[in-house]
Length: 70
Picture 1 (cartoon, helix red, strand yellow):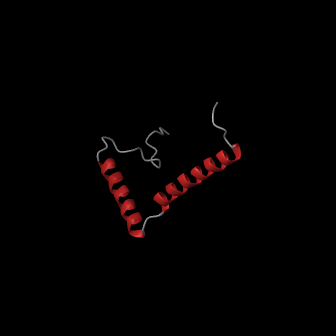
Picture 2 (cartoon, one colour; picture 1 turned 60 degrees about the vertical axis):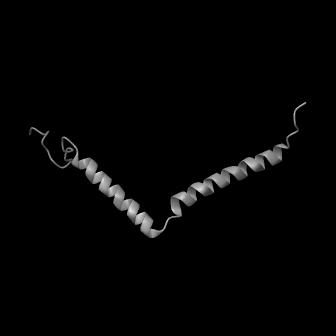
Picture 3 (cartoon, one colour; picture 1 turned 135 degrees about the horizontal axis):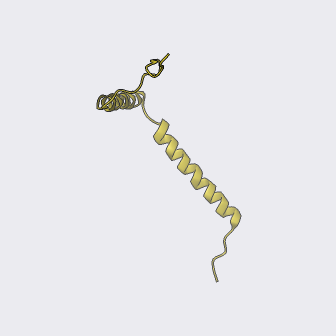
């Protein structure tokens, strides 16, 4: 015969694990020093500029009316 499982205890354990996982994600996401946040932001901006610099065609300017023939 299988083991008896207290469903109330199983739900509490499951919820506790979920809260612990969420807390770990939040610590990783928000638990950084200001310098680390600024460094990550600057690194992201640098990567974006490099990626845009390697484009073959520049993106269409939404303000230009090159498509309008009137």
